[in-house]
Length: 284
Image (cartoon, rainbow, N blue to C red):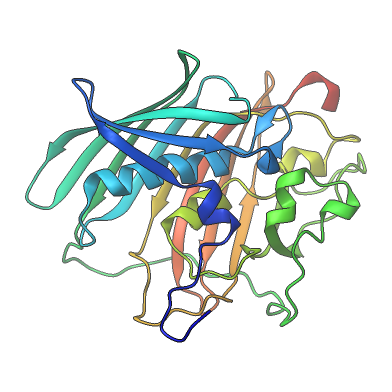
C-alpha cells in the first residue's frame, strides 16, 4: 500500500457493505449481501445483521453530526446467504433528532423491521452509576477466532474475544447467568456504532451457563442504546478492545432477556443493549 493511500476495508466492512440503488415511493433503497461466514445457530448472526441495517441507516441520515442513539430490530426470519434488499424511510427530521425506519427483505419475504434515532449531542448533566467491572486488562496478543476451536459458532472466527467474566458453559451447574470479556473485530479497525451493535449480540447466550448442551437461541428483538458518538478522538486506536458484559436473570416459557453493557478500555460507557430471545427445547 502506497503512503497516503487509504487502507482497504477489512472483512467486517466488506461483509456489512450496502449499495445504494436509488429512491422509490417506499423510501431509499439499498442492496447488501449476506455472507455465510457469519452463521450462528439457525442463520446469520443477529448482531451481524444489525450492523448491515445500521450502515444503511447511517448512509440515509448522511449527517456525521447526527450519531446513532437508538436502534431496535425485530427479527422475523433468518435470511439465507445471498442478496437482500433494505428500504429506509426518514420518518421525521427535526432540528436535532432524526427518526427512521427500515425493512430488510429477501425473495419477497420480510426478514427484519427496524426503528432508529439519530441525534446531535444535547446539553445536560453527566451522571453515571455504572462502573466497569474490575477485570484483568486485555492481552496484547490478538488471537482472532480463538473460541471456534472450542466449538463456538462460525461467526466467532471474525472476533477477538478474551473471556474475563463468568463460568464454563454447558456444565448444567447452578451459577450466575453472566458472561463477559474483551472483544474486538478480527481485522483491526476503530470502534464505531456498527461494531457496538454487533458486540451487543456477540457473547454466548447466558442461559448456556446453566444448561447442559448448546442449542439454537434465536433473537426475537434487539435494542441498542449508543451512549457516545464515535470515534471519541480524532485518531482512534484500531487495536482497541472493549469490555462487554451480558447477563440474564429469568428464563420463562422459553423466553429470556439479556442485558448487555459495553465499556471502552478506559472505563467510558459506550453502549447498552437488551435482547429478547428464545431458548429452544434442545437446550432444556
